Length: 305
Image 1 (spheres, rainbow, N blue to C red):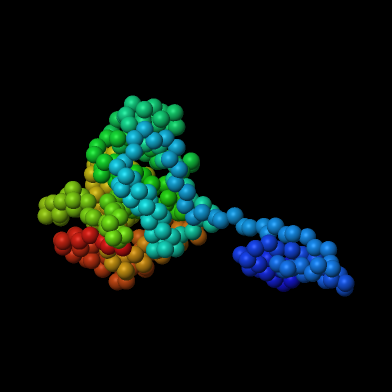
Image 2: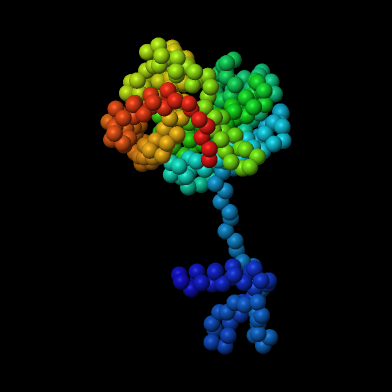
């Protein structure tokens, strides 16, 4: 094994300098080099190279419209950044190539027909949708360029997280998708995540009115209960998902908590319990709720990366 490895390294090294030859001496020993002896028979060697494994592959399978040049490029770069955040911040690894297969529709009718073909139904209120089984993201041109770009990022976040952590609870899926949808690549290469202004306003209004659900209640919801609440109360579960996630992403202790939860999910496929969250977050759930309310009452400044 060591001999084979050494030969491979030697061949790779020599390949950078030109042709490679192999020959055997009078004792039958195999040699490699770029200058074979004239008195011995030699053969030219073509080194085998290992294929480069891409971490993320973004394919645009249908493109009825194109975002303006810089916005298009920055949106694709933002998708790559989201993937790197899932890898680096949360330690998630696909052990292969992640995929985002994009379909961009100019007209809502075409978008809805695509949904009908894929999942057997459509919704007039949807601006975008993702299909986890095929890593597909479909968006129609429902608003201005920036709004459409945000929808692409939102749905792409869903597709990436499903590939990396398929057992993640729906509140975290939706929270991270909303968090990353405002991601913007700046001209200097830095990245900025803005607060969702409408969600921020609703959180503060509900706090003032005493109507904001507690984090203990919210984090105890299973996925079925969450979806039922979303159907009945519309904005509340989505808004609290964004607020909870944005709060956790705003400080190292919060990101560390998310990392531990996601890594445990990767090993067990079991959703995090309130008891486990109480154990992971420093100070427990009581401190978590206190920190969250303080954060919600403060100015929610952009996050820079």
